[in-house]
Length: 247
Ligand SMILES: NC(=O)c1ccc[n+]([C@@H]2O[C@H](COP(=O)([O-])OP(=O)(O)OC[C@H]3O[C@@H](n4cnc5c(N)ncnc54)[C@H](O)[C@@H]3O)[C@@H](O)[C@H]2O)c1
Image (spheres, rainbow, N blue to C red):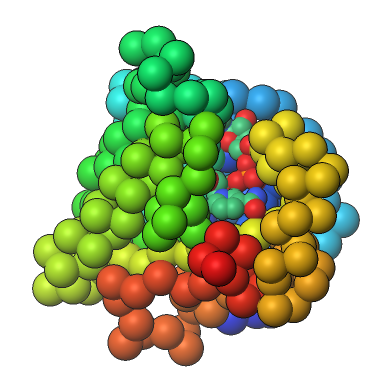
């Protein structure tokens, strides 16, 4: 297989399903070797990658635990020699009115979002130097908020801060750090929104269909981690059909 990511080693968190799965397959189709960190079995995405003629591996990793993150990164380096690309995609979050959320509910989005992203960025830093790429997943809800999603929105806003600050700090180390805001109908979206809510979001889009995790979101991530974006850092690419949550 020849592609723009030939020889690159990528970690994608939360890629057992949804947007992450699409990103993992898109990177593999371009020749990257892809390691999937998830609490769910990644057998399906491994089969997708194999069917596409790519190479992937997976391990169960609870990204809330920095020791598991360190061990995962070490295992990837042991297997493939380095890490060139890190995509912090995983999230778990509690949904509900702020005043009803427990301590654990409040912690969940932060632990799986900005904190886990920082754990992975810290662990991967020595390998990412001089040419590495990081892509973090943000949300359109950061802009205007969304009732019932306060814990999620706050955690995603922290991912935005992490992305901007790390891009500033790591430019001199040769590491580009960017973010994307997707809209795609995934298992996560479907468990959070009912059919009417999904239809309501679609009505607000300029392009009135959900993004495809592989061809719409994954291909844009290929750009952000590939050779054509070497002068792009600290930016957020909107992959939301033109404004799902911004009107
Ligand atoms: N789908 C959308 O339209 C949309 C919109 C805006 C932002 N996003 C962002 O895109 C990313 C992917 O979203 P999605 O809709 O595919 O979500 P999803 O819920 O379908 O998938 C999330 C993945 O993260 C994994 N995960 C959860 N907790 C974990 C943990 N502790 N350790 C390891 N893995 C864990 C899950 O097992 C799952 O595979 C998220 O960061 C989300 O905030 C998605």
